[in-house]
Image (tube, rainbow, N blue to C red):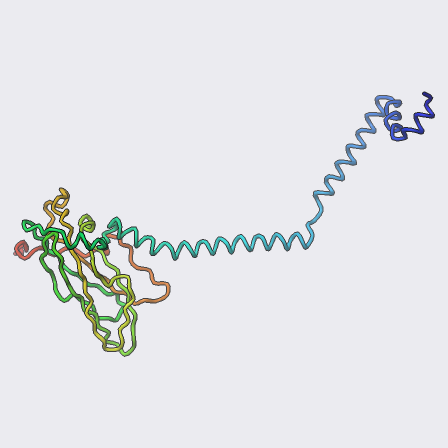
Length: 261
């Protein structure tokens, strides 16, 4: 086959043949130029500024991402309060008492006659809350396995309605696992009109297994404390883990220490 026929059928081979026909030095220079041209094209491609459309799309994606994070954070914040309350009520963590739901067990439980527990009652209101709040009884004595009923009194002495909400804990917190509330007014908003007064019941019992816990063998006094706050947006109830929020238990009447002279 002649060179002219090859040229007519495969014109693209010219560049290859022309390169191979050159000297090695010329071939090297040609390859170097091709590499520089490709490098310049790559740099130009990557150095192009993004268009306005690309910038707008990136901004929208970033906005959606931030909004999603904010929505998730808000949802977790609102879900944390009831979740923490349920956790504390089920485990008595932080001195929060149990909520009695097994009414068949309550009806059939046996009272432990050989053990008597003194239950004291405490009430608190912060300076921002203008209610008068106090227990109707300072203390009562209860046998484990026996139901008991106590009352608190709340009064609004102001000339405008006030909505209140209460939190509670039990001291010492080791006994909270056996302290069961059947009926209570805590964590529920209470509205009192000007001059209105209400009695707030606390129906409870101490589980009979209290007497079988070696950690409570010599513990015969517990303190149930309630604090009422004015219900407002952004209200944060006090941390039940803070020992400063726990009032101390008063000594029993027969164990009052003598005053030193």
